[in-house]
Image (cartoon, rainbow, N blue to C red; front, side):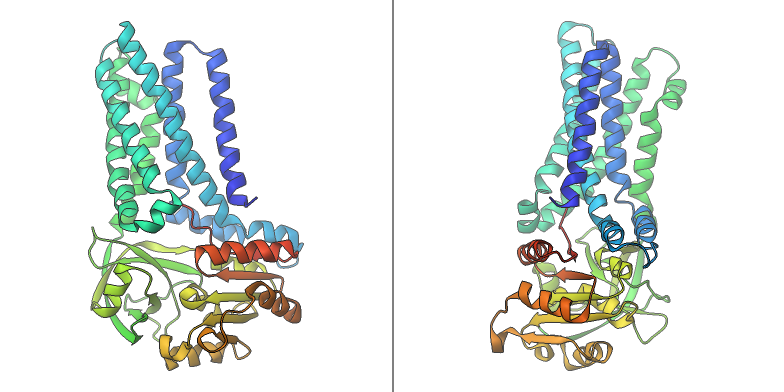
Length: 416
């Protein structure tokens, strides 16, 4: 089982145990407060593990392990990105469960006449939150996310903002329902501070919104090489989110080194309507939100030597590590004619950094046995790990096949 699924299951089990303990040991009024607190805690954790500074901190902590430590320990630390995904999804699903219980208990109190003041308002707000969270969850399903990325992104953005407002309103209603001082009840409620923390996590990246001039080169109709002139360098292994309009679509691309000390680059490959429009009609400026955030390729520094396996435009996330050359590596790139697709200049730059790279051209040789090729190169080079960047189906299959052969294999998990 993927570590991602283990973390998700662990979160669900902890919440289930808490629910069972609550049912067997609490009175109805206390259950109402506890279910709301549990829901708010889960929402807070789901938001926190997506906060860019926390993600960067977790990656920095995980990748600070010395290379002298056992490979098994370093391989476990390399799964840090799966920890974030599992906790996020597990807490989000648990929050929906707790909010369902809270809504049912509140509605039951209203029907029996024991709901007290603001009972109807509590039911209405709780039901609204449940609808918003349920809609976000439905749009975040892997199949729905792949087929309708725009809907997924819009539901998470505007649904998240609406949920924060509704959470704040619900917290205020619960404080007013206590019968004492509303201010005192708000200060004493853990939900108040969790809502404040969630709001801060949501607002902070937007406070760091910047409009940056760019220069774009399109070697072909498949890729655009973008140089961002923002006056600073970026750390290898990070990715930045860009958009043409602040409230439009946002997409994340790996940050690449640039000869100019005050710039960074990224490769935008055709993979949907947004990228196709970007390549066909490149802008002269983009919006950047938040800070560059560590991603799966960052874990390469945990190993003495790695093999990079990329197919097609999967080369883009690998480029920061390959061009910075901090970890000894061997590249296996399976793609169509690379010079025609990505431009001779970029291919020369890759080969200068990786002179032993294997460029397997599918238009000339067909598709290889990727697992067999990766396994052979791993054994030839003595690499400790294989990092696979491809489409979802190919990556999951390749990682599973290599792990079955006893190789440490790492690849993105496309978690929501």
